[in-house]
Image 1 (cartoon, rainbow, N blue to C red):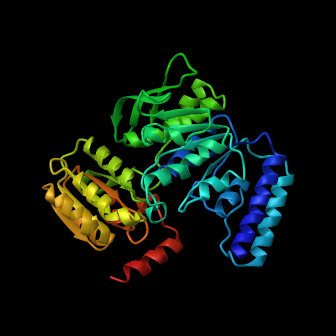
Image 2: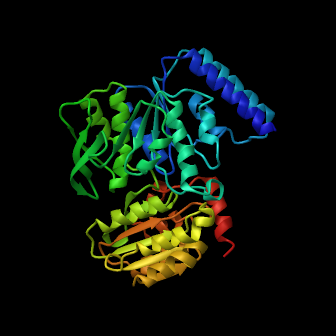
Image 3: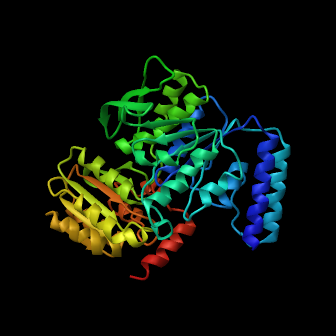
Length: 426
């Protein structure tokens, strides 16, 4: 009851704030995967013209989302009445002060049915970006039709929507009631898309951003790795065009996009190796995209370290097996699995394909094994979920320098203590 009353109070402040400042544009980002990368990409591009507010973390839940919209730090002590007294005071001050932003970019998450539709009672966003419909929190959603209804609700309660054409099945167009919808992606079928002309791991993707409002594409270099990581940048460009930014502003903004920590972030490893750090989280769509990216790279040795994918419910065994079947022995020198579900279901499927497989209980053990078997110039993909997997701790073992640890996810004192307690069990 206490949390619910706090939530309702915060939502009331958000409604008052947006009514008091009608000139502020609200852009929301929802979807099964890629929300944070898309949100940060949008903020990066929009900052070429606008004052932008966004929280770079995944503050997208009942309490954190209203606080992020208001620009108030998430408190440490959620049970202290004095804490919330100070938060509410800050919210009232924010409402009554002149606006310090032009655009708010807010991530909206959902780990159970009804959370995205509920946000529609809070505000009418100017633009909603829907990144994907794929398996997520399947212990609650059960099937993809339910996931689609949840995520695409954002398109229907917003003034305008941008839908990822590549990662949302066309059959879900039936769920869309809003006539003001455009699509984005990396295929020419989308209204907003990117034509890739050149790529290197160091420099990223060079090519042309296409928008229907412009006669000619705009040249840009987007410093990310993998086609699936171009899509957040394309979404950012599309939002910028919708908000009236020029081609030169969009091009400059796109060039400033870089990977978010733990999301296909290329890092230097020992022996001139390249680490693709994708350790923030994992899902079937994200794991498949990461493997495809690894296969498209040229290297004398490729290693995939794949952790269990959490929150898949009854579909877990099937989805882990499917990813195992995508492991190509002609591409991968080693498939290394971490966690119960990956070891039990993904590893046997990869072995059946002919892959050389090694399984471990912990990320640290896996990192140690990678260190022993990697060759000079190798590319190593680390892909895993957070709860009980924490593959970033395996990445540490093969980084070229310990000072690079700061580029990894979950390195705060609180997270380090939590992980030490977890690894201490083994």
